[in-house]
Length: 153
Image 1 (spheres, rainbow, N blue to C red):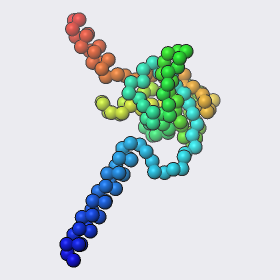
Image 2 (spheres, helix red, strand yellow; image 1 turned 180 degrees about the vertical axis):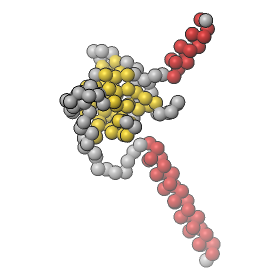
Image 3 (cartoon, rainbow, N blue to C red; image 1 turned 90 degrees about the vertical axis):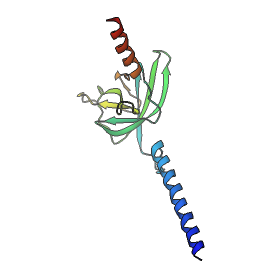
Image 4 (cartoon, rainbow, N blue to C red; image 1 turned 135 degrees about the horizontal axis):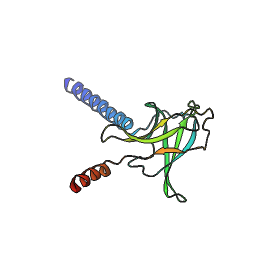
């Protein structure tokens, strides 16, 4: 009987461990078990260089997540990256002169879009484009510039 109790407790421990690993994987991947889709509206922005930005990257305002990147494509007319973002509908106060820049969390962390609100009274609506953008700073390019400047001196 004691052997049976040990086997059952080891089995429960293993099951809890597998559930913990599954929960961690879901959390790290950014997926959500909450199937209720949040009401959003779509904005676009064009960037010369998006660096390592990916679909489902965060969109933040003052460090608070207000949306996510839904799609990244090439604008074939301007030959730049076209980034589509889904912004939470509760964030209905982004002015027409809002700027977007691609930021990095930490030195080598994930890239995300940071929004800075302007002062114009008119607000962005579904399908509008953010005109003022700042591309990603690519670490390899910065290191290359630093090294080549040192060599040429």
